[in-house]
Length: 146
Image 1 (tube, rainbow, N blue to C red):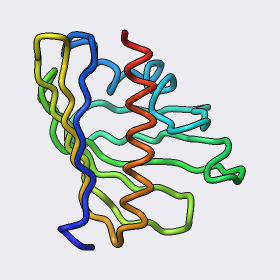
Image 2: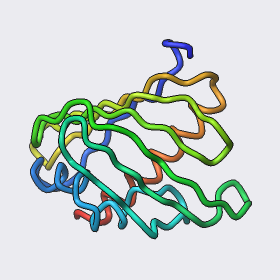
Image 3: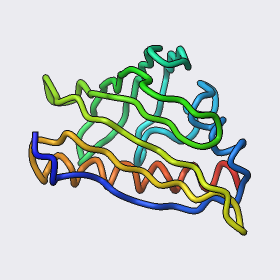
Image 4: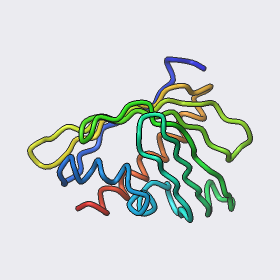
């Protein structure tokens, strides 16, 4: 793990912090936006509490190949409508590192600014893939809520 390799991004969604935060905890809403690109989400399991687990199954085409995999983790911090911290790992390429994702929600004039940071990557390639995934997923979230 290299602490200097991380995803950092901001996105403004034209919706209230409550509505944006709900999209991170509702299984039905997660199915609509959380998978990047053309991946779909056939199943979501969420125990939305500190110490609770989640599993998000994804399938479809990624990087030109059909794939299936899960993203799973544990909620470490939940401050409703303000902050969410969870660890996560994926099953696409065999054992993957556990990363930590911190999401902050801030009310701004035209909606909610989301600030996301993800740390714990082994190399730049893995980090770059996650950056692309988050950008794609955030576009879906924006379309869903506006």
